[in-house]
Length: 190
Figure 1: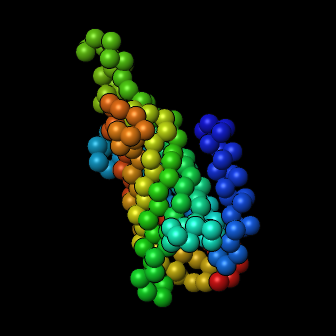
Figure 2 (figure 1 turned 90 degrees about the vertical axis):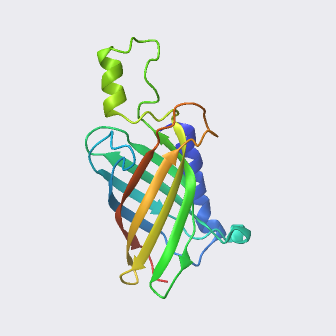
């Protein structure tokens, strides 16, 4: 990942406790099915995340929580990491809807060499085995249904999408769609 993205994300996570003190930090581990829409890339992704406390100064935006996230493909294909904001909308005492939005950085293939002849073996291999991301920096959108199993343990089913949406880039935009489950551990008590 680019050092500047990591530095900004780390600063945001460190500043979060200063602006909010009524929610806990949460560490998450999960697994996702990789590239559900195109099925070009294979293998599950292992995921890791850290979510901070609500940012009270952003109450006008429904008090989101900052997050850091990493998704690592077990077949050595596209990995990505990101940072952004996550919201928690309760549906019942133990179930909540958690949408999130941020930016991500990926190490995938951005495009094929368009100057190579159509029968070039490398061009054919990339076009048939890799999602062509278009850009390194992409939007990261997540929709999750979260269940509190106990005071400190959570479990969620979630869907995520990374793409430039023709906003952060133009042209190639195969993107990635992943879905999976994650378990979370909240530090401290609510």
